[in-house]
Structure formats: C-alpha cells, structure tokens
Image 1 (cartoon, rainbow, N blue to C red):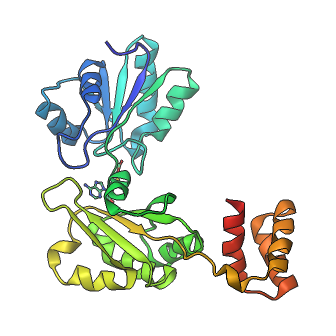
Image 2 (image 1 turned 120 degrees about the vertical axis):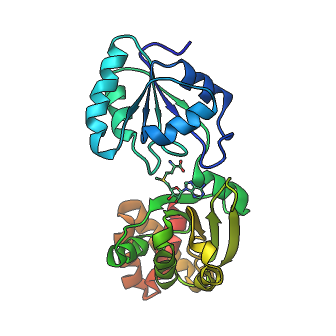
Length: 280
Ligand code: SAM
C-alpha cells in the first residue's frame, strides 16, 4: 500500500520498456492517481505492464494548475505518482513545480529512482575523470548557444548535454568552435533502443562522422565532452601560485585571477584554471 498523502516521483524507461523497477511498478499500480507529462505516451507503458491507474496530464504550461489538483488529492489522504515521458521526472522535464508545491505544503515526496539518459551515457562511456557537469539542453539559437558554451569553456569537468536530432549538427559545430576541437567527445544515441550507438572521437571529427550516414543524425542524443585541459602548472611560478592562493582566500575567484594576472603578468586563462583547481 502506498503511503497516504505522499507524492511518489517515479522514473520510467528511456527506451526499453523493461527498464523499470519492481518498486516503480508496484507504486504506479497502487497510487490513486498518476500525473503524466503525456497521458497517451504513458498509457502505452502502463498497459504494457498491465497497470490501469487513473491518469491526469501534467505538462509545462499547466503544471501550476495540476499542482493544485494533486495537492487537493493528497489533502484528502490519497496518494499520487509523478512520471514524465521518459526517464527521471524534473530532469530536463516538467515536475519541479509540482514537487516544490507538495513539499511546501508539508506532504511527503518519495523518489523512486531509475533510468536517466545522462547517467546511462556516462556509465557506458569509460570516462575516468570522476566529476561531471550536467547542463541538459543548450539554447536553440546559435548566438545564445555559443554564449552558454563560453560560460562552460574553462570548467575542468566532463560536460553533459541533451540534444534533439534537428539541432545535433549545429550544436556539435558550436561546441567544437567554442570549446576546442581537440576535446574528447562521446555521442550516445538512442540508448536502450534498437539503434543504440555510442561513438567516441575528437570534437572536431564529429560532423564528418554524423554526415557519413544519414541515420546517425536521427533519434535522441546525449553528448559528453571532456573538460578543459588541466593548466600547465609549470608555466606558473611558485610566487604567483602563492599570490593567487592569498587572493582567493579574500576575493571572489574572477577578481582574484584578474589581480594575480595584473601583478604577475602571467597568462590569465592558465591562472583561471589554477584558481578553479585550488578552489576545488
Ligand atoms: N527526464 C529524462 C531523463 O531522465 O533523462 C530526459 C528528458 S528530456 C525531455 C529528453 C532528452 O533526453 C532527449 O532529447 C535526449 O537528449 C535525452 N534522451 C532521452 N532518452 C534518450 C535515449 N534513449 N538515448 C539518448 N538520449 C536520450
């Protein structure tokens, strides 16, 4: 029996319908109502598992209204589940508004973990570096996309993006232009589905790979890009390191780097990288 007054946040498959936990199936079968991003899409999944729980639609433009409806259910001692079209709700998907409202009203929110496209791609990519930054979808317009990429360019973490087929080529082009073509790229396409592809190459080789076969541009994509290369610390003198360390203790990172560069005359980009590693 589900917990009364509780909202369960339930992960569903990202392709293969069997990628759903036993607990998720139990919860979806026993709650009073399931709030789903697209009722029709989720009906297919639930009926595949012989589940016929009442469903209501929750998408980006009605999320606040549905949040009120769900809260009213919970106030009556009923239980509800939230699912999205695929993967984990509220991760590049609607759900956060509902979850926040339910939490603010003091009702329990219970996560039921499962598939997520970003983690699925990372798990199969063999990237040794332990840190990553999940960005999700970049802006659709080139100018804004390049601007967003610039804010990520100095970060020493693997960058994780979601991308749609009609923008994959333009996004990979902008990534190479802004982040640098020598970075390591993983294209994880159609994960857990029939045409699952995990391809690794340099960022500046991506467009040629995509164009070699029209099918490669189709489907859903997770893109992993290696982080900014470690600064060449041999370039930075011991004295400048000490100066930067002292400044970082007192000032915001950007200001400390600017001052250290001004004092030492050393490369600002290398100092920025060093500052990031000193901070972490
Ligand atoms: N909530 C989902 C999750 O937990 O991963 C993400 C939903 S977001 C609206 C959809 C995007 O996730 C797609 O455009 C694609 O970038 C990525 N994605 C979802 N399923 C995928 C799959 N099977 N293979 C590769 N990428 C996928």
